[in-house]
Length: 281
Length: 327
Image (cartoon, rainbow over all chains, first blue to last red):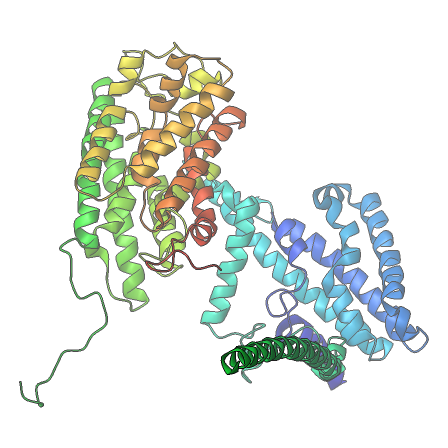
């Protein structure tokens, strides 16, 4: 049971997708104009994440490795369509507030990241718990961002008037515009660094905590690292061939020059000999 | 000379000029004071309440900018730089960019934003990538559009100051009489506290050129390119009156002489300054003619501030003796 709890809290705190892994920044910046939108977006993503993780956890033994990405897209897109239609049917106001960002959950990198780095290596139940933890971590993070932006940008919290009760108050509407999202995320990250809380670049071990788990040996990018030697070798060979060709050409040119010089010298000697002959005569 | 003499070995510069950040910033402050005082007095003549509010706006902007710098540097345990007058200039420029009847907490918010977010977070004086005062103005303009664009003064009896800004009238976004050029040049028109008097701003700018604080390049080329742009694309044909109204009517004089020439956020290379001024002139024209708002100087300047590193990269002069070398 301990394993499940650990996986669950890993998603919420240790590897929080927004504040630690810095994944899914597009919905984080775009839809957090209010806390309610944050919760809506977070819970939609959580539902997709859990179901996709579960199915991928079941199917990962069957899906061939070479076509896993298209397969994941099909699985994720299926669940996104389900969520999209459910939202449209039951919470039309939230559906219209989130707009294009619901279909865009298909390409959300949190879902892909977890499918690739967790669900494809673990069993279905553990993957489901990971999806729940990650989803709730994402929900919590974007709700906090949404709350801060809504509080300053509109003077409300979860739609309830707070600052607006102060007479003469005008909301700082920059906070609910695009620059506000960047300000708030940057300031929250700065606080996190200041307080030495875990983040993508700020770990007690002093090493980067990346979405891929930091295991470079099994990374797709590792293929390039392994092949680097071969590539270098081939490049070196090409360079050597070029150098050899150049050298040969230079030698040829030098030989030609030498021959010409010899010829000239011979001519000169001949001339000198002739002159000598004349003198002799 | 014995072999034991100790020599002081140091890196250049070996000759120190008497100019310092403090003296330059003080000159800028002196140059800005006439236009500010004129603006406040002019508003006061029409409405005492608005005049007092303008005076308080300027004082509060300066005080909060200096206080924000002091508190931040104290908290971050950095050397205190409030003595170099740069925060005073930033605060004064913010105050000059406020409309007369702004609620006082808005300039405070602007000053804190300018000093902490735009200046100190990027490393303090000399490190900010855009003009702090203008960034604060744009922040307030986006946040409190209705307050920042309200230039009406209650209780005004004389027309002119009580109306909208001249360029807003020219653009047709506000009702009002077509401004007379002489009145507009002296500054007896509506606008923010410090931008109205083109005459005093130009005198301040000339003082800075005389003191060798700024070069003529940026303000003159900026204004000229803008005027040409307005002649061609302004939509009024070859109407010199219209062009002069556009040049002297809005924030262009304040922006061109005092904010585009900010040392930190303008190019350091001579050719780069020309490129910078041309881009500024065109962008201001584009924002004024094709934008929603009548004013475009502040957005043009902060946008071009971001391009400065690229401009400098391509206009770096060759060192003496290396002119003939190929890259």
